[in-house]
Length: 286
Image 1 (tube, helix red, strand yellow):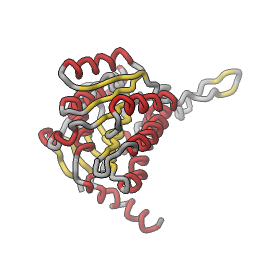
Image 2 (spheres, one colour):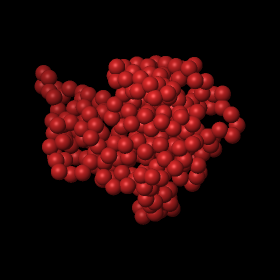
Image 3 (spheres, rainbow, N blue to C red):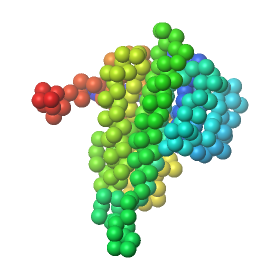
């Protein structure tokens, strides 16, 4: 079961973002930049953590020039201490953390890992670089772990909170030339599903956004050549999906994957669909 969400509906609960504190990794450019601008446009306070300090500060400048509130801090998401500093910075500045978006991500950092193309030194294979897994999955664990801690601090009893992760179409399908990326995005989807019943007890929304390829800096030249002539997912629509997934007041939509499989509208996959087919058999057998 799926629900199509039009572009007009992505911001139908925009008033719920007003005054909320958003902590966002990877907000200096690409999807993260559009997410930051979307939330600030509707009254949220945005805190960006990114290695690209100049880019992050440029986004902050755009927001504050337009009358919004935002701040940025240098953050290597693979560093626990850097992420801790990000959340401390956000909490000290605005007194709360309401919406957490672990958006930072990279593409396959070393082509050929697990494809038999091992580097050999002195006749022995060398350990592969696993930065893609570290940034796209392990760092997400850090962000969510810290996010849940700071979300609970200084929390009003009736306030709502949200965690929105960035998956991919590669969360659902194998990308042969990018096994690390595929594994990381499958992991993000599984992480969201595992956390859903846990965060529901805390009145925290959770979701994962799964876009097709988009025109961002993560899309390298070789993939651009492969995708030549194929429509890409519009970045503003991806940002809108993040916004809607965070602000939707319907508890039944928490824990849902949100799909953008092409250049068409957003599709919300209802949780019932995750209990059909082979999943139904597994639920019975396990």
